[in-house]
Length: 346
Image (cartoon, rainbow, N blue to C red):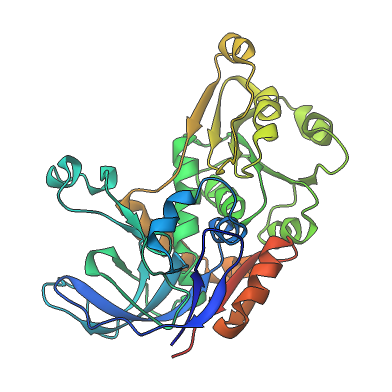
């Protein structure tokens, strides 16, 4: 079968022939992949930006950690996961034996391995995964929308981390899939105003407009403060959520955040950011990191996607076959796409 793989610790990916997975063992299921999203992480891995050196030990490895598929075969001891079920797959595989796992706190596992990073992922027609990583998809939901579950859980966790409340004014930095999800969940949490800013991000800001967000700003050629002037007349923001991965954005984010406000960082940054700590202290501001969502969030997000499927389908701008996955990566890299979904075929 064909798979999109990272072969060397250098820039580049390859669509290549690989053997299909072995039959599932105890606690495992075999999945026919229906749809896999291209994530910013996948693009960073393709370009081999700093921070992913740990992957070298797993190469060659099939990428793809945002995916949904149909269970085609089950091993023993798989619980309620049934053959024929459409599932979204949590990409974080826990060890089961570290102190956190033994204490029943799998979210805090210290030996987790990422599907699509340290073990084969969803840019292939078939994949074998732990049954415990499978989350049932509501009946009738488009598998391509179900493949949005993983990034949308990251978005939901960022909003939860920012403690967005009824009436809050929220600024989202970064209009990609994570930023789009953050805007949606901030609105669902009761935010009275959601402003989304990007830089040279016309197509993705247009996607946000289609999602119902008319307060979008392109900061190209001006500072964040200047770009937000119309909105700052009502005061600084209660919560700012950064999803750009650009270190230079962090300090300007604090400058448009109100006293005692919360800045959530969920972008993955290639280098440290400079922060005026004296100003931070005097403003009583908080900086919080947000990353992987707890297991319980997955079902909540899938319910949201099912309830708002007609709306969130606007997030998907391109669907490409696995044979054209490298073209899809080019679209994702150029910012000319919102979310690119790859459709593997057995």
